[in-house]
Length: 175
Length: 219
Image 1: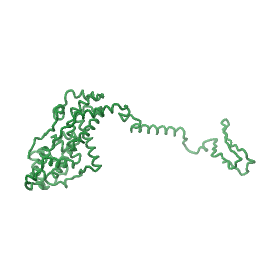
Image 2: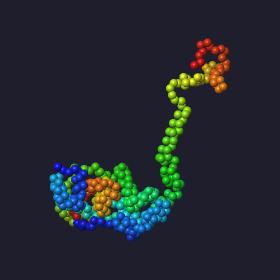
Image 3: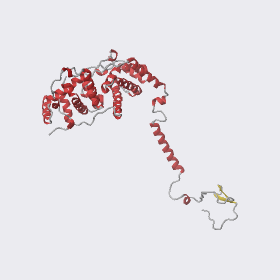
Image 4: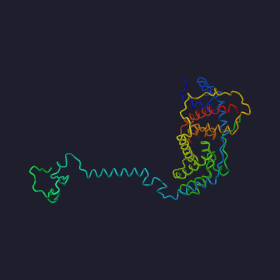
């Protein structure tokens, strides 16, 4: 029965770096053979690769070192010259936190307005009001006739006033 | 084949060596003061920190991307990011450990952007079933001296092989094989569990062996 893949990988690394006890190493080497790995060849390959890497991986020295510092300072000074709001980012009105707060505030205002200005509850306005009149349109088809509405708050009455009519047709119904 | 000591250090100018905090020497006594002044917005203090760590920062980035000019530019960007976020540094780790995460984040972002742009290609989805036993790589015989690779060619092959590794694998193999850190140090530095460090090392080593076997077999 093979050990789990992740366990094998970790044991392999520990074995390669000499972190296993002799007994653990022997057990693991047997498992390697069972999986088709040759411990000696593995050790040779790993040691060779490591030596190759170490020998040929020297980093170059940082070039233009004074200019390196100068350039960073220059960029820092440019940054410091910006207004604080721009520099810090999150303090601008366009920052995501501010947009989120603005959105939340708008929702709150909308909720308050909805609650106070839009009547809610059962029944229509007409049913809940003792008096209700809606003048939808005050235009007329006759050029000689004009229509206007007048609301009298004292009597709570709305009057539809028509000028220019010869007579009111008998079948006319104000709806 | 040469077998150098496990901690080959990168060449560092004397002024940069003073601050080799991660080489076990610890930060210099005035470092907390420099950090505090930098946090209060003093560019001169930060400039001193840059001077101390610039070579190490550059070397780490260079090992990851293997390109000198790009490493120079990325080190600049990383220090600027460090300046902008130094007020977040609380002193719970060494300054270089904190700086290292910024350096690596900047570098890994850059490497991934290259990959998206099609300028880099690496395989992160390698599995044990794709791993070739080293027994398949035993030496097949000596090359003629004239056919042997020059140091420059070997270096080019290593650079190409490292660049084929995913950023995650690259990071751990460099910390282990080039910087000589132990598993726990790597786990702390990279911020991953110990088991993940060992798994990544396994695959990174195996991939490098496969890509470089004709090089080391014929040295």
